[in-house]
Amino acid sequence: MKAFGFDFDGTIINIEPEKALVFGDIVNKYWEVNRKAAANYWCKKGGTSRRAKFDYFYLRKFKKKLKDIEYQKIEQEFSGRLKNNYYPKIKLLPKALKTLKFVRAHFGFVFVSSGMPLAQIRYLVNLSGLSGYFDLVLGTSKKYPSKKEHFEEIIKSKKPDLLIYLADGVTDMRIAKELGIISIGIPTNRPASELKEAGANYICNLDQSVALIRKILETDTMLN
Ligand SMILES: [Mg+2]
Image 1 (tube, rainbow, N blue to C red):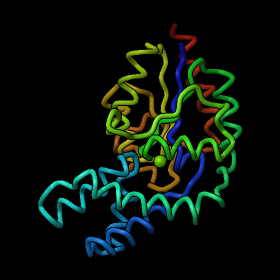
Image 2 (image 1 turned 60 degrees about the vertical axis):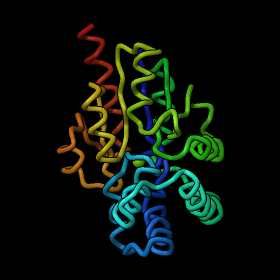
Image 3 (image 1 turned 90 degrees about the horizontal axis):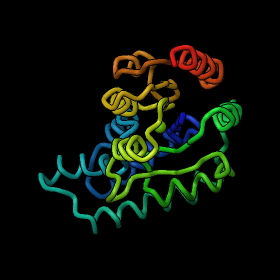
C-alpha cells in the first residue's frame, strides 16, 4: 500500500506566523521571555510539538521541567486565542485542494501528522471541511509526544511500500530522514535551503507538488 502524510499548518493552511506571535505574547506575559525571540524560536522549530516549544522556555527560565498542570493552563489560553481570533478566518492555501484530491485518488492511506494537540488538529481539519480526505488525523498527546511516533505507528501498522510526507518544518524533514520516509519540503515558512539541509528529498512550492508526486509515483512503479 502507498501512504501519504500531510503536515497541516504551513502546507494546507498557514497560520504559523500568527501562532508565533501569540506564543511570544503568552511566554512574555507569564515567564517574561522576550516576545520576538520566542516568536522566532516558534518559526524555527516548525515540526516539533507545541508542548516542546513551551517546555524549552520554561526550562531556560526556571531550570526545571514544566508541570502538566501548569502547561495545560497556559495552553488553554493559547488555543483559546487561536480559536477565537484566527480559526474562524482560516483559508486553504492556493492549490492545497488540488494536491489533496490528487493524493486521495492515488494513495491507499492518507493521513495528517501535526504537532498540534490531537483534539485541536481534529477540530481544525473538520472546521476546514477536509475530514473526507483523510483516513487518520494525528496530533500530539501523551501517546504521541512528537511526529516521530506517528510515523513509527503507521510504518508498523500499515507497512507501506511507499511513504511520502509533505511538510514545511525543519524538524519534519529531519524526522522523515531518520525514518527513511520520502520528504517533500514546502518553503512556506522556512527557506528552501534550510529544509534541504535538514534532509528534504524534494523541495517545491505547493503548486508544483502534484507534478512532483506524479513523478515519484512513476519512478516507484518503474522500480517495482
Ligand atoms: Mg507545519
